[in-house]
Each structure stands twice: as structure tokens, then as C-alpha cells.
Length: 495
Image 1 (cartoon, rainbow, N blue to C red):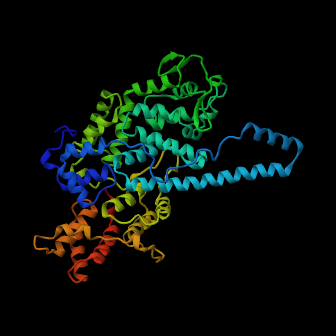
Image 2: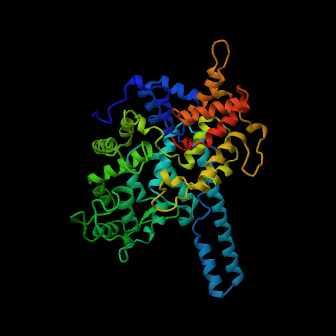
Image 3: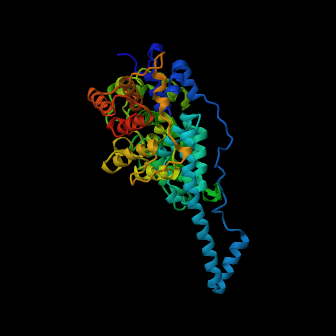
């Protein structure tokens, strides 16, 4: 059998393959954007996605405050001390009210950040960057409700974005000095006289090697000692040397006064680490079925080897993956269940719908099981089939209707003129030289594009009956009705 990572033949990079790449390595695109990607050839298309030049200029509405939950000044601490010593209940209550006001402001800021990030995913010219930032957010999962500091969540988000297509080693090292993660896994309480094992355990179990792979309980305990002293002051990482355990440690069968950086180095040297990360990338980008096929296992082995050979540089590994015949194999198309974020952002970017009201989308994401900046646990989102149940499917179908029509399930009509949706771009290019349009072929073409792949014969029959009910012709309103119908199909949940 051919190497599954063998490059796809250039002649096989057609419209369907380009759409598949844009859906998986980003959040989809309009028919015009897919055609443009096809003209670049596969090599040019992957280069466009992987090598897009970063612009570090802050995007709109990114001016978030880092001082909302600032530490009390020495003067404030002294005033609080005096009030308590004097039993001044009014003064104490005033300080408590100020603290509560700051906490409310911080909760308001995390909501603004959720809208900001969702908007960024919708508008970005670098979709792979945002897609990978979302991936790493679920991998190095940290939740706002535990750390209760929105700016620390923003700092982590920026860190993940800066290295998302860079090097996994950078990510693994950075996460052990990230204030949000240090707080989330209690490493700010990891002291030499009372080591806290949370960060060491999850670093091994969830972030690098996988549960029970290549380490034991002693490695966790000794790894915790290596990570002592890692904490933060304000918004910055701080190494508290007085709390670092500088005695000899036993890690992975080796003895020495290992610190946190050396702990990470030893993890990365473990062969299992590259395999674990390759598997996570594979399930996210290629196929999220519970059981990996024989070809899939061979592909994962090849990706892990390339990770090691490139010293954990992610770009060449992703270039190989996105250029491989396995990535475009029929069994791997429409083989990933859209996350709630993917569902909403892809609908907007592919069909060209207005984003409507951003807070409504954030709330819908929460109802569908994916609240940005709030994964359910340190394990992140389970993904795959866990996204779908009777409750979430109802919301998933209704969010498509909302984006296409502006109507909510309760019948409320959100239809200001600036949010009107013109769907004609989905079929105007299908007219022949005389300007005529074959309505039946147009409907099939639109449905095929919206579903991201070929449609089953029974769906074709449904579409033909739908068109007949509309009198056999299509226009903007009828295409919107068609999109609502397609959005309710089970196949629309796949990409």
C-alpha cells in the first residue's frame, strides 16, 4: 500500500479538494474563494494557509484592561489593616464593595473577549492561525471560572496564537510559565515543603504523553518538585527561588537537581510525546472517529516521525499532512463533526451570511457545548460525537436559520438593513453565457457546496421535490429557504 502521507497528485486538487482543505485548515470560504484556492495549486494553497504573514497590530476591540484585578497597593493594604484593627466595619465594607465592582467588571470583560475572539475567527485573513489557536485552547485547557482573571486568559490566548504554527516545544515550555495555567492547576501553591502535583500530572497525562504512557507516579511527584517556585506576580510569571526545591530528583530513571525546564526537555525526548501530539492533530484535522484506521495509524506514525526529525516544528508537519493523499481520501472527507464554533464560523464564512448579533452566537455556542475561554475541564472538549445530542442538535439547526434569515426560534426578527443577506453569490456564477440558469442543477450545486461534498441520491430526490414545490425556479428568497433545509440535514454537521 502507498505511504498515506505521499503527496496528493497535482491533478487531484480540484474544487472539492480545495473546499475540503479550506474547511479543515480554517473555517471554510465562499465558492469564489474556493475557486481562487484551486487556481493556486495544492502547493500554493498550503503555503497561503501556513505561511501567511502575521500582523501584530491589535485588532478592533482588543483594547482590554490588565489592571481590573490588580493587586492592592501598599497604601491600600495598610488602610485595610488599620480598618480591621480598629473594627471599622464601614471602611471594611467599602473595600469589599470596591473588590466586588472589580470582579463584576472582569466578568464583563471576559464576555467582551468571547465576542472579540469569535469576531476574529469570522474576519481573519489567517484562518489556520485561529483554527490552531482554538485547537491549542482545547489542548492546554484553562477555564475562566476557575482562575477568575480575564486578562490572564487573554495573555494565554495571545501566547497560544503566537506559537500555534511554530514549535510545540515553545508551547510546552510556555504553558509552565503561563499565569492562567499556573493558577488553574494550582502551581502558584506548589512549594518545596508541600509540593502540588496538579501541573506535573496534567503536563504528562494530558499535554504531552497521554494517560499512563511512559511515566509513573514517581515521575509525577518528582516533576512537581521540579516545578516548585513557578508562580506569578500581577500579570507576569515569577520564579520564587525561595520556594524551589533544589534537592536531587529522580525523573524517568535519571538522577539530578532537575528544574522545570529540564523536566520539559526530558518529556520532549520521550518518543511517546511526538506520537501523542501527532494523534491529537490527526483527530482534529483528519478524522475524529473513535477507532483509527490502519492507514490512519500509519499516517500518525509518519507525522510523529516528522515531528521528531523537525525538533517539534509544527509547520513542516502540517505541510505534509495538508498535502498528503490520505488527508483527501474519500473516507476522510466529511469525517469530522463540526464543533459549535466551526459550525457557526463556517456557515458565515462559506455562505456569506451576516454574523448577526455576536452575543447571540456566543450564547448559542455555550448551549451547543463550547463556551470560549471556558472548556469544561482540564481535559478540554471531548469533541467528535460528544458534540451531538437531542438538545444541541436543536440549537445547531436553529443557529443556521438565524444566520441565514435573522429569525430566532421564538420568532423574533433581527433584520436591520445593514444585516440583510444576499445569497445570489451562491448561484450567479452558474449561469451560462446567455445568462440562463438551470434551476435544478443550481439547487444541487448549492446543496453540494453547503454540505461540503457529494450528496446521497435520497437527498437529490428531496431537493428536486423542494424545487418542484417552489414552482421550479430559484431566487434569493428560495435559496435562503434551501439553505435552511440543508442546515437541518445531518450531513451539515460534518466537515
